[in-house]
Amino acid sequence: MKEADLYAPVKAHLQRQGYDVKGEVGAADVVGVRGDAVVIVELKLGFSLALFHQAMDRLVVTEDVYVAVPAGGKTKALRNNVKLARRLGLGVLTVRTRDGFVEVLADPGPYAARQIKKKKTQLLRAFDRLEGDPNAGGATRHGIVTGYRQDALKCARFLAVHGASKGSKVAEWAEVPQATRIMRDDHYGWFEKVETGVYRLSAAGRKGLGDWGDV
Image (tube, rainbow, N blue to C red; front, side, top):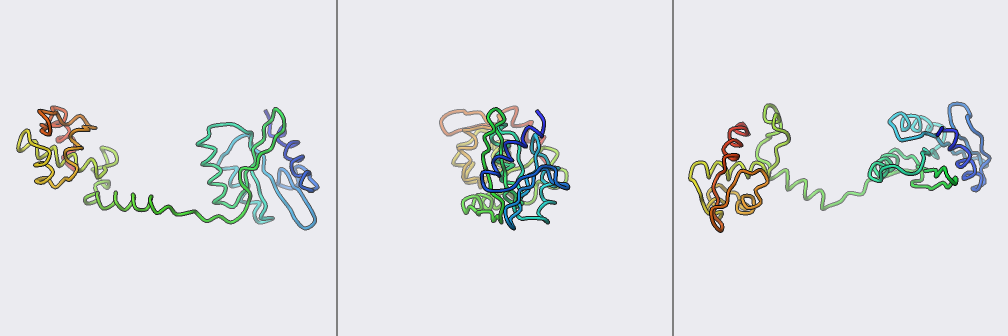
């Protein structure tokens, strides 16, 4: 497959909208003119940073700039690339080469991200739960430290000192409201169930305390 294979379907697509279309005009792959309106389409076999840079350069000529790529590919990657194009003010076309079908996934134009209150609330909750700033300096040798990890460490330290204990006691004394759930779910393999609601530190938990002692 060649970029040139995308040209005929894109040209036909623009012609149906009343544009007079020519290829390889100056630095642009495809140029359509309809009265005073000018549209530019950059053709590529896949998304890349170079493609976005190339298309952004065309915005100094016209606001109507599209990128065109073959249809198909990973859905998540395609969605992310379309999202990026929208943020840059670019349009996106996909071309189904077996029959020349052109689909418009985004039109050029100004873009304002829609803020989602729920995501902001989740971010602030995670910020408040995280004690100190453990992801700076040496602590990051473990990977990203989360508030959940910190709470699990508090439970593990309590059990290391006091031995097997009821979840409610750990929750109160270690100041971890979700202690019982954390020990029951045992995502890190640090806890062992002794009886209903009672947990002790496992061998992996003792090792974890040693490994994570700087957090």
